[in-house]
Image 1 (cartoon, rainbow, N blue to C red):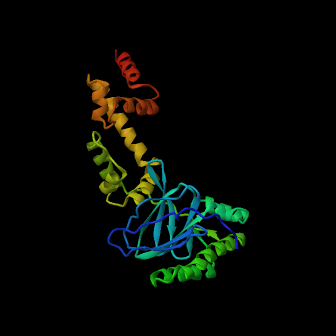
Image 2: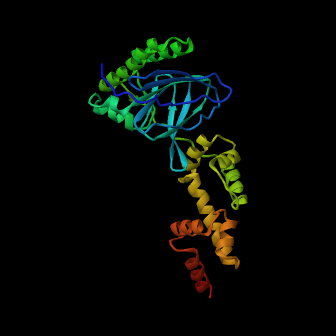
Image 3: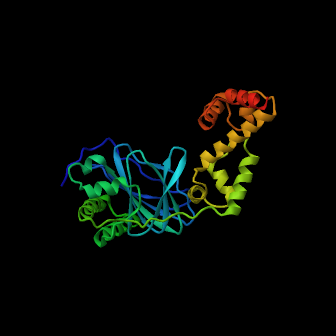
Length: 301
């Protein structure tokens, strides 16, 4: 059995949504392998979970869910997962799940030191691809089920401890045998034109205010995770980039047709400060607002 250094305390990997059944934690203090079993309900958009900087987090869902990774200020849709799938998040990844139907998930936190010298190139690819994978291993699935059942029955951790380790070991074996397959790629459908019209109208009516991804998704009438993927499929842009383009376009209109100061224009277009306005404007227009205003005035004259 591989010996892994012991930490001061285990790293928590998940928490249940308020009002739900409490998650069952099964922790291997000596190896720092931590297991959490949580009940999920259809329609739940789980709270974002940060993967520890010195670990990999493995998710085994029982129930259909969609998984997303945070990229800067946006969420990137990684794909759908269900029973028989595993999703691995790398250190410092921020992950959240949206559940299509009621289910449960087992989340294992595995220290990066556990993999050293024991992992195949194939398994390394699985851990780095950031897509749900169908593992196709009946023994691995049975081990996962048994661990989840032991959590519900409040069985002592002495029984759960070898199960946690067996799951990780089996995953290593399955990866070495090249039996884990990537989930079929699914191209998100484009946002419907009527939903897009609602989003455009909402954004243009609220440019002077803070506008979030959730606001735009609500205007479209769908979940934030679905909205981000469908909006990009329809426009080729991330929602945040589209919002900035609209703010810059409105600023150009105000500079062309009013004598407002740059500070007034920045506030009227939702940038908050003149400095932020100037930075974003130059990124999109290729010149500062003052330079752009002068060039337009000279051209008109």
